[in-house]
Image (cartoon, rainbow, N blue to C red; front, side, top):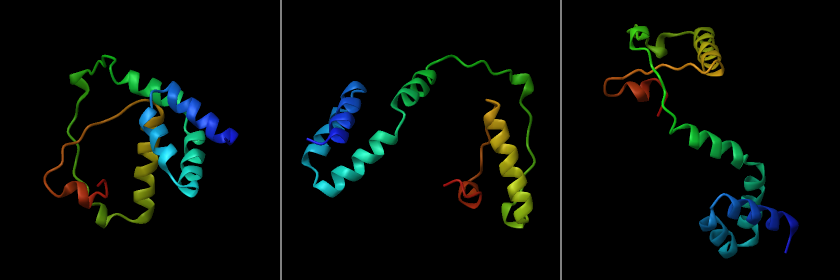
Length: 113
């Protein structure tokens, strides 16, 4: 048995992914190698921590909520789209977020689906 396969199997068992181990065992060599390479690149510990964090209580100050103005992304220049993407990335890096509810069809037009 190949060392990468052993390592991938060890990781999968540690993180209770036995169903993936079974899939690996039934796969042809090409599929197996491709999946093993993907498994070895995944930070399962970080995924576990992120998952556990979803159960933490999050305090949201409702006084800070503000309505947003609508923007039609089809009318934005590439520079404006890039600027808004950069703003969004910075907000995420600072552990902040926003929620927006869209009317039907808006998700598609905003390229989020």
